[in-house]
Image (cartoon, rainbow, N blue to C red):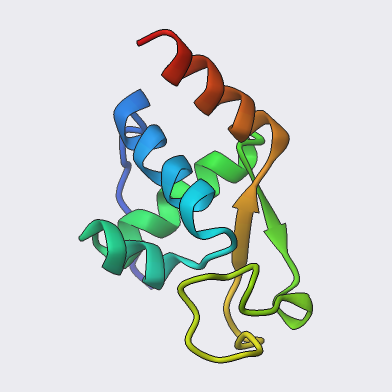
Length: 102
């Protein structure tokens, strides 16, 4: 079995783009984020794994999400087979600090 993932450099600019997406739209999943930011789904998955391991985002149980939390979803209830992520307190703090320094 081939490993198709590649190493993605997580720059501060890329981190900001992803975290701003979560702040704007709430809970979301890789394919939807990729569509919005015009990025490859595999690349987004790799980035989300890094952001999750660094504590900038948290996983959210999709069965508990409603449309008001996942603003890009068209259905009232979310799809259970997606892994949804939300901005963590560390992620919100990073955005405040970065945007405050500019």
